[in-house]
Image (cartoon, rainbow, N blue to C red; front, top):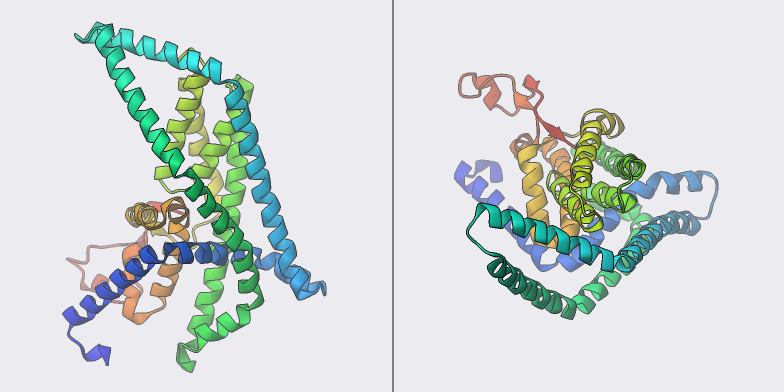
Length: 374
């Protein structure tokens, strides 16, 4: 039926469908995001679940034990950050003195290169400090609501994970019933590949967090940088957000170093160590750990991060790349949406489609590698 429609109508229907999906995700993000997170964690826990089932462990226990492992991991992260925040609170007087010294040094430098005197600069800084305090007060007013939302999110996750693992066969049957019997081999292949990609991606990210924390935190501790382990953990976690996270991680690392030292050399040291660890991660370690089964081009990786962030905040930014990878797997195996898979991918045509007509068709063509991420 749809094959007989004009091209403009088909493309309009696709765009309307895309807009409808985004609108639903924005409206129902508080329901959808915990389910998506639970879906990805459930797939990551499948090997543990299957291992326990093969050992004749009861199904309920085979599901609960992996969930408890995840809860223990999250609990350790929460304990670490609460401990580090306690150390920062104890060091607050020294942090305040260091910040004051850095501000005075900046003020002297500005006075030397501009016509603003110290009084004007102090008045400006005081005004901005008051603005920050007012902003902090308004944010604190909504902190209880945000905190309660986080607890609800975390509280729903284990329930969703349990039910998804328990009813996975119903979900699989539901997926197969959407397609004709002739298409079931393709559907099965897509399901297996999606599971493999998500597992390798998420487990690879956990390994990445571990070795980046050890490398970055360990090197900074050996050099003598204060809060080295905290900088390492924050950067490792933020680095999971493609492209944007590394920039934010660098900024936080610089701020933590500035507040803990009265000199500038530690800041330069932190930036150099971060650059070195990132080089190892991007060019040597991560490609060997995660591999490159699904290649997403940098343009749509960045767009996915910003769209995910605008829809669902930080959780949307973290989930953006796995979602785009799953969509590419589906698009590549669907004749109607194959062009969308090409658009998301990193496989550039070996020749220009403007010159060689063969590169304009929906069939395998010679490609060359682009810049890959994830």
